[in-house]
Picture 1 (cartoon, helix red, strand yellow):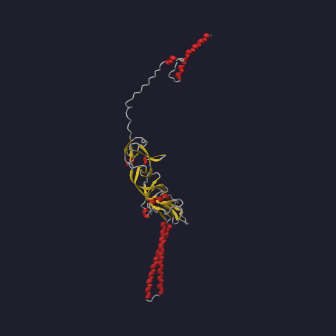
Picture 2: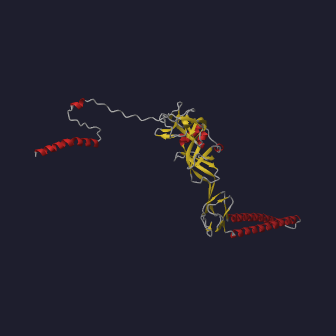
Picture 3: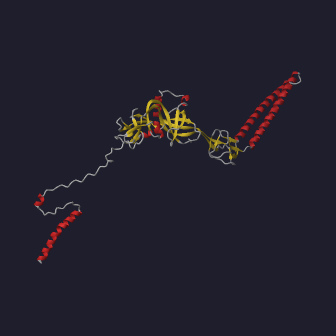
Length: 423
């Protein structure tokens, strides 16, 4: 029994070092000290450090200097004279918008246009039954002929009885009678002529014509219906004039006071107003492509809104503007800045600190410059403060020109930036 136990202990002593080595390899230990504890000989043995790994070979391509940065397009601000403007939102309105109403009674006979058609002034639009009005005109003309005959006969009798009176062949009473008949015939002739004019006017009312150039709306009464009877004021249709067209907006009291201050408290006359320009744009248009003039300014401030109504008029040959459209209006403030600085609007950026531009300084390092802005003039934006005429403003490759980086500035022109041409 003792011999079996002894053999088992010797097997454990042999397997223990191998087991420890396997566990150390499993957990990534590089070296396991297999020396017995308190091995003074092993502790006194000098340890030689492992040689460091050899450095990788450096290729010539890695020793080459970094490539030069690509040129960044820059421009200097343009200095020019700029007028101050105020931009407001308004509406387009028709200069003329008329409801066509029958002036005489009768059945609507015919419609001579298509709904939505553009018509010229004087074009025939509706025809009302004309037979009775033609007969009334003919009757009135017959009365004129009768009155003319009576007048001619009375004049003849006046001459005859005046001659007989001189020969004592007639009395003064006869002469006075025929003078009365002559005057009465003259009055009847005037009344008959007036009836002819009225009959001709009523006959003319049976034809409803366009009062101006415009676009017809949908007809509101179909042929065969009685119109104009019993004081009826039902509209036959509506016609709208679109060329020229009004644009109407309301200026705040503060803007009105600024305009007055810029004008030196000078009051504009009607003739002066016709010379004041107004620029207009639709909500989806860039800039202000439509130009007109001021046509009317309300005499006083509306106490309910605290605003002043301003109305402009402009040509609209292509009917681009329609009544009711929201429009942007730009009105001059009466002040001119003769040394304004302008930069491309696309060069502007914005963060929590406000609007800014990137400027390349004299050391070709990009700087961030916050600016105060004015109005938009085409593709250029007025900068009221924050820039100097000699500053170089980055206008292209903004993603590569971050503040603090050194770049190669390439000067270009504002015209090239506006047209998209390369520097």
